[in-house]
Amino acid sequence: MSEEMITHSAEETVRWGREFSKRLKAPVLVLLTGDLGTGKTTLTKGIVSGLGAANENDVTSPTFTLVHVYGRLAKVYHADLYRIESFHDFETLGMEDMFTTPSVAILEWSERFPLQSPWPQIRVRLEHLGGDARRITVL
Image 1 (cartoon, rainbow, N blue to C red):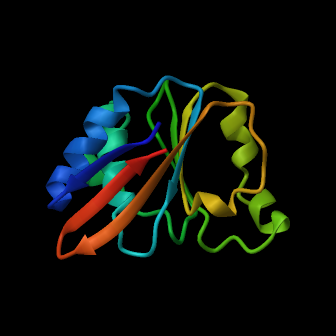
Image 2 (cartoon, rainbow, N blue to C red):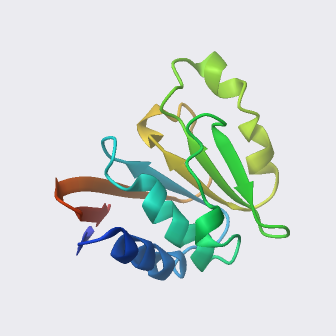
């Protein structure tokens, strides 16, 4: 059964992410999909801050670094797979560390994630509705 939410600002998207984070228990993969500009990183700001791993202002897009790690004890991984073209590209990310300890992993452009994982997965689709409105669907 899917759940749908419409937010009308970046602040509402962050706030929804904070609420959503209360449902997450490591280990879990949060698989984000959506076109450019639909709010994947904005949602991640709320999730990471809601988990207490970092201040929302410290959460940035990992577009060029590809993977950010937040938190000291309980790690939150935030990866952007947009530039991943092949399994070899994926291997160079060093994400195997992520699976050594139960953590929360948030993957933007998750449709490019080439591995099966034993961890539970939550799929979240974001859609731009015009202006600052976004539809967030948890599948």
